[in-house]
Image (cartoon, rainbow, N blue to C red):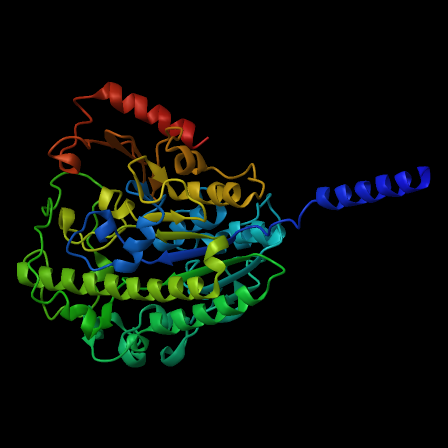
Length: 474
């Protein structure tokens, strides 16, 4: 009897041990980062009602859209530097190559980039298109020199399909059917060509992104970090004709504050835009031409939106969407005539405000439209917290997870910089400090917004914000 009882006890113990054995550890979430070049918040989900952007809007509806997201620099290279390093950096487009030079010289401690950090924590990292400054992440005359890597150790694969456009530099500034920029004055500033999505470079980028996505989702052993960089709506404004046709008869809203500032600001002459063939027309003098430019920009936004839709649909088709964090980010804003600027590079709101959308599995607050002030630097620590990866101490942003989960966040003021000035944005004001000591102060709650410099009238606000700027840049 005792022996039978002993056997029964052993069986019960064995069964209980099996039940208590921890289940297989769940794989960390994948990351899909979608970067869109020169995309201001010209999307229906960000208040531009006339824009056709159903795929990005659907992402916003199922995620969180940050309506007051500001980049840390109003041009491609330095803005993407802050995204991919989590730190402030050089203000020039060669920011990544400056970092690379320091890395090679071993002159100072250089921290890992965001993709390298996730790679160190078990992720397969793949980049397709324009994610760093050069599409494909290489230097050289045509941006295809494999000995000149923008971000060493970052990517398992860093790809740029060039299709008919000869090389990454050609694709970056390409129009339909393989036309590349050389020189700009012979290239039309906008274009609407007959054909499929594949007649422009983003078609090739999207096709390669889909190929990489299916390959990555077939590997069940490791999570992936896939970054996809679309070029449009970057200049020149070219998109397949159906995207333009949707806007050709549309009456556009009036351009806000279209006058050139009559005092010192960070205004610039839109040199990049003016280099292209404009048929002798100036959008600041010709309203019909200005509206045509705006329609072609809108067509490029809708074209980019369609590519985003293809990537998101493929992610859903693989089933990996159930364990993937999606971030959609515009690398900076773009003026469409505000302050008489057609481009970026200023420190006005139009250059610095861009879309940011984050969606992840089991979100509590789907469709959240946040008016909290956030900045590009916040993305790195946010992705670390959402994936359970350690947040590195060197990151200079603030994680947005509290805002995403509890709709609360610690208030912090976004800053941005060019080579000649730095700006800080609060809920009510923007202060811009020039290197020569000149100060701009704008009341963002007023009717005049960034058209009336009130620095002389409110010196105490100037001093307060100068101190905030100093502390932020410590």
